[in-house]
Structure formats: C-alpha cells, structure tokens
Length: 181
Length: 184
Image (cartoon, rainbow over all chains, first blue to last red; front, top):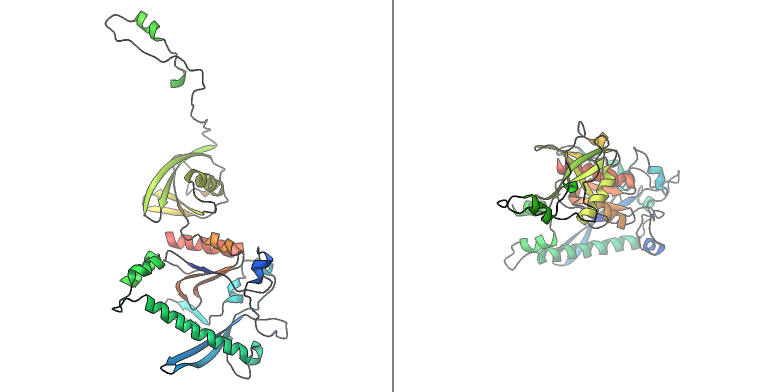
C-alpha cells in the first residue's frame, strides 16, 4: 500500500477468492460468485491461485492464437481468512499473480520463478483441459472485439477522440486532464 | 448580568416616573415561558471547536460551525453528530484534518482516541478542524460486495495500484494510506 495515487476515483470490482470465502453473503449471492479452482494440490495439499494469459492476433482472414502463459501467486490459497489477521499477512500474496516487482521509480524486476509454461513440467499442475483452452481463446477474441468497438464508439466521424462523451462516462477530472493535455 | 433576567417595567409605570419631555420607555412584560439560555459549559471538561466543511467537488469551504464537545469525545462519535447535522446519507465516511495553521493541515486518522490525545500539541478552545466527505466511498462499495473486493487505480498494472481486500484491516489500511496520500 505504499504507492501514492492522485486520481479522484478507484475502480472497485468483485474479488475472485477461495470457494469458502462467502463472507457476509446470502447463499443465493454466494453461488453466483466466481472462485479460484487453483492449481492441482501439491504434496503439502496446497493450491495456488493462477491466471492464464492467452494472446491472439488478427488479420483480414480472422483471429489466430499466438501464445499462452500462466502466472501463479506467491503464497498458497488458504480457505480460512482468519489466519490472515496479523500484520505480516496480506491477501495480495495469495491472489496477486503479477510477476513484476517495483524496486524503485522506473526500476522493475520480474519474479520469473512464478511463471508457468505450457510444457510437460507445468501444464499438468494447472488442471486444465482442451475445453478450457478453447473457452479462453473465445473469451480473448470476444474481449478484443468489444474493446475495438468501444474505441470506435469514442471516435467521431473525423477520428477525433470524443472528450465530452468520455468525460460523461468517466468523471475523474485528474484522469481526464491527463488525456486531454 | 443576564439579559434574560432583567427586571422589567410596564409601560404605565415608566410613563409615571418620566418627565413630560422624556420619550416613553416601552418594555415588554415578563414572559411566562422559559427563556433561552446558552448551554452550560465546563471549562475543564468541555471544549469549543470550529469545524469547516470542505467540499472536494468545488474546492471551497461552504459551511463553518462550532461545536461544544467534551475533551473525551472521539472523532467517531463526532462524525455521527456531523453527519446528522449536515444531513449526509447513511454510510458516508468523513475525513478529518486539524488546521494547525493556514498553511499546515494535519490529517487525523485515528478516530478512536479522545480529542485531548488527538490534538496537535494541546487541545484549546477555538481549534479549527476541517472535514470532507470521503470522495472515493470505498468502504461503502466494499461492504456492498460482502467485504471482499479488488480496488484498482486507473492505469494500475503490474501489481502496482491494485489491492485485494478480504478483511476490515486491509480495508482500513487502504483507506488510511490513500486518504493521507491524497490530501497531503
């Protein structure tokens, strides 16, 4: 939490956590939640949250898959959050999969030990099937199309950015000034 | 001398004793209803503070008022009084600052300790506190999500500017840190 910020607003979204984290929710709400299945349990019965990144490209003939990689969190995912109630523990260690570490201003390092590849060593630990990969590819393509449509929506007939429309959609003045100037 | 306990004289009595050249003295007859009085003030246990409301949207101080409080009061209880007074919606979170001097505003992040302990040096009558609504309303949204959420800054990436919240402590840490960073 030692990072200064200067924007007026935050993006707040639901958390994908452990299946047992249904804190303060009714059963109906909780059953609609996503949760981490995690890696296949290791010899210590620990599972790790991980994400899968699928890259795709497109040309006039359509979309093509390019690459797949995965990243896992630093610490195993626990089912009992009360174990976090001390000063040293953080849920980010269980849920954050980013490999980059900020050492100083504009100085970064990468924890490549947490990078998982689609090879014989790692892939079996992920518990994925070919159906999951197809599902991931379809979601990737649909996301690209949606982002592309949104970008087009924010341009006028002269391909100029619609600042007024954007300001209505995102009323963060600091962010808006950065975009405009 | 109390203004409210001044002995009053009827119009006719005043006219009897006055000289012909004097203008008539007209006084109201005593009222049977209780007269308004200032609240009692214990100079050792009570303190009178000024509060300024800072509107973060317009950047101005549209409202100033005073409050008589006990020195043992804390910001958590004061916040509830102010929210009622200002008619803020339930769940509104307030940020408090002490105006040490016009160029020095100190954030007050500990809402549980008494005003006496909270004061910059010494708690004095006439100290000025500034408050504003928490612009990000983070706590409300996180509570709506059952206490679990991911909070991101715009352009947050590479694990910087992204925070996972799974308990009250993580939420409090997030709010305290960002409130301080935003307002210094």
